[in-house]
Image (cartoon, rainbow over all chains, first blue to last red; front, side, top):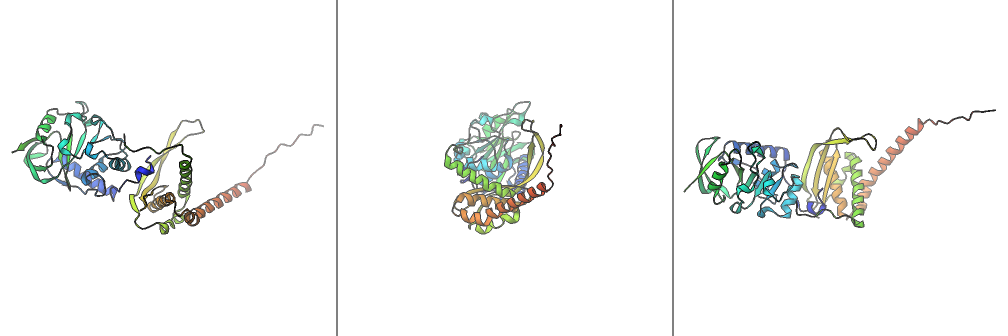
Length: 201
Length: 160
């Protein structure tokens, strides 16, 4: 149970939990079904987290999913907000997390530090929710793979520096590996483990 | 592995506060929606809805006798809400049923009680009427039961 002092720091979550969570979940499904296509998400502006990251985790997490936050998001306010609105336990070891919240994409730990699943249960891997600056500018990537009919070019601002190399190594583990959800200021983009990615220079 | 501290235990002051708060929440749980409604007039401006009222289910667990094995009796609908006053006091409301406004009123009552500024007014306007009505209901039920009471006694058999 939350103590009064920690609850005092908590700010509101979804205004309309049922419909906003459903809309966000639909956006997540679409984003992972068609990697590289931006899907609009109504962020939670009152959260101590990046608004779109907050909406995604408020939709996905519950008391059975473990969360891991990177150093940028490891504050008492965020811990209290996540505990109040999701009830999900925070873990210190990224390899035990069902979802990882990455606030500083540049310093994101190696993907191999997270749970990669097993060949029998690839679904037990970590899903990374990475806050990025946006999809209008930045470095360009070419995507291919399931859900992409013709190679698709995307731009990502504020992505991890060596994103293409990391995802290539992650894809080599298939069916194991992590899935990425990039959270921009107003939208999300999915990069599941099945997507092949190369940087356009 | 959260970084905030659990509620400290052992301090007499905190235990007294918790006990009185528990009494207030128990009254709120037994109140009718109409009995809680006056709390809205006592609430200050700028109450923040931390958790807008929402409906859900709780599993009711039962056991037969003190030593019976626990079993799931069934589910009941509950409404819950959480509010924060401008002063920082956070109130929680959980009530049986599907009355969302009642859950928010119960949360307001919890928050205002913790605020502690105007407990006399809370007592007079909200809590005492509820307690009075509950006592009256209890007395009436006791009277109804007493009217049908049968006393059994054994006559001493005359032996001579």
